[in-house]
Length: 509
Image (cartoon, rainbow, N blue to C red):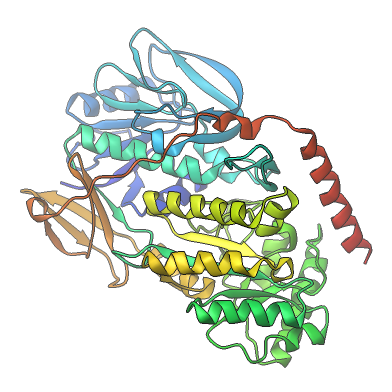
């Protein structure tokens, strides 16, 4: 049988998530009978007429599975709407590893005696009959949301670091959808199979990004020394405002050099953004640097910037006001996909920790928490730093920890090349006689298989289920005081004012 996802309305937000997860999927019509042998799960995102509902119900009665979301309406169920900022997963639920999800929108909550709570905190429910789950969010709209706001990030101390980032926790929504689909596959006693999102089977990936604005020669030399001593190939995003700064990087080897800015600003107009990029690229080429990537000042992103990036034929960019702590994707706006890959990172730099009065030991512990959580979740670790903020020993200790845990290391250019190869794949997954058959055109991408017995990362091909050595998924500890990260604090106003002043300064400059 096909281990394929069907979706009734293939909108761009759903395409982004399904490609990130690495699933076989296609649009499914509800105008004729659907066999559970053809589609493992059907995602329903729209309202349907009575004939289409009857076809869907027949599919369910034949042991199919349905994930309801967005504007889906279930016959006989009433709904109420509610404005929500954030939702928090419950411990011991199938979704407990997700933690909290920032929504900042209206959700649609089903109400019926025929419902059971799967995760009361996330408001994920299920009808008592059949294999189904109901998500109260509009996934498509949330993934396409480009608004940003200041958010605090958890630390085991009173004062928390904050940054202006994507309003919606898109990475959490992606994980929620992945877990929901896995749950439904397992309800049908089917293996959940998708492309693995790291380039190694047995190594977590570590990527280190450096933004070089205001970086002196001494700062650059010391940061480079620490990278080289620890065999870290980093990506240096270059501030090209003066030739003196560029001379700092001429002799570096095994380090990627990319574009940060000429003037430290992201503009509202396409022309200003393009000129800023063009001037930076022109100066880098004087030093023999052909950049393929970009990271914006302040982590800012807008559509005019993306259009300028496309005009410059850059391969990737990385802006946490569009997304953070997530897997790469191609942004969509004006009903078109960009051809510039977006690579989200963890958005809290050491400078933000310093601004929140962290000691060096607290800084190290903060990043250790982030790294260990990513290890549990099997996600790439991508953190960043401004060398002019110094605290070199913190990163020396981080690199030593990374190496002691056997992480793989790539720069962002290498990772973007790998992800672009993964993204173009159209995998086919089939399951017959306890064997999984995987088919796609790459030897560099692996598959993740999960069953009720655990999970495994395996090379593609013909896979005998009972010969797999499954691992158990570790749990992320849910912090008892996690809700405080979304409580208002007077420092939020202070930091927002500082941010506005910085932007005004560079705009005037």
